[in-house]
Length: 519
Length: 99
Image 1: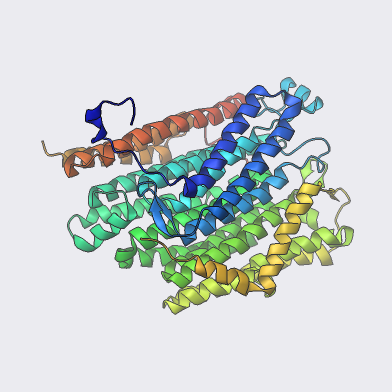
Image 2: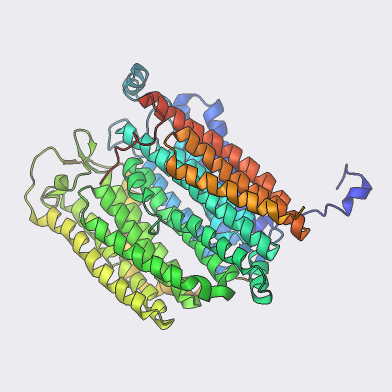
């Protein structure tokens, strides 16, 4: 405290920060800032390579830091961040999933010489400026620092132990994603529209979250989860504030995970955003948001479970049914996958309803299975193309199995995993959340879940039948040869899906050991 | 004056903002309504800090201001790029994404 008058020393105690445990978040943040400096000071030709080094180097160092950060549970950073099993598990998962998704960003072989992002996002679509940029093969590399900023927010989100930290992490996670959604090279009007919708609805929902936090603060006189839980068991006055607070906070978080009836943005944004960005955010945002949702409901609102459990159960059932029924009616591949991800949010919510340690472990395992299958599936979508870019209409996928059996088989693997077929990671995942829910007495929800899974199986298998047993309608569809990075990314996704399907006990054990929240 | 009145005021402001988002058609106005909701939350935080006698609520208000400023930067950039393309900031005309 040098430089401060002696009198203020007692008033402002120096906060104690556990840098060792905060290192993964800080490293990703530093990498993002380095990325901004690269954009500012390096010549355009050198930026791409430099960004790759900074981005992937940063993620690897962050993973190493997480590995060496130690696993003694505790509350760190003056109580703002929890350092426990779920936080560590989800931080590791988010880092790995981001790494795999970022590999897709780097592909410049599918669309020869270009990547998936607009050369200059501010250029008006179809203008002379844009044309000249495209002819000169100008590439922007701003996506990498933006995506890293988003990752740093995602790392904080499931570890946040008070409402303020959670709100800030939510915004740090979301703001770069709004921009990334609007950066597609092709179909730019759709992409800009997706960014606008995502931004307006995202900001709307985080305002609900914030006002809910204010109500909870008024009720508990604290933002810390443990103290909110203590307040709920000790006082009964102004119960209204607590209920309004829980309701508004739920709206904010359920929006982020894409649960019905707050799912409307999901198909639009997943369709409009560049497919590689969709792969990234569909997987990692859901992981981070579920971590935060489970923590706040288990730790802060656990003692008043009878107030919110019925509502979340109904939302879980509704989300599963809305997801699978709307997915049935889609003619567009990315929209179908978006509704399938909504259905997965419903399946994951059954694990939340279980409200047991077993349920948390099941959710963690499910997120691994879901994350890799999702990145893999959207990665395949980037490969199948026609003259105008990605061939997203389902009819273009007819007969794909005859033309390129490898790609079709890989896509089938990811779809089967999402459908929850044995020998893929989706089966033990679904089994784990359902058995946790039924052990906690939510049998009706499990029945709804099984029915939803059956309907879901139908539309996943329909795509597989379309690929392997239908004759191609036209010859405009081609399958691009991916770059090495994309191939590695798809191989990792397929590998995890198969290994966790054949030997689920490895993953289930790790997830189970990591399933205890610190209170 | 009873400080709870400020909570009622903040609830009213929040509701005006929430309904404004649902019923207004101009993206800029919708965005202003979201900002109104954030500031309503700020008022609630500061009032509860006064009622409860803790400083946490006042600290939150500062964080929210910073976050709101960051949100303005991002939001106006997105709305500007849409406006440059379509010469319109109406959210009804942004309707290409349909099932």
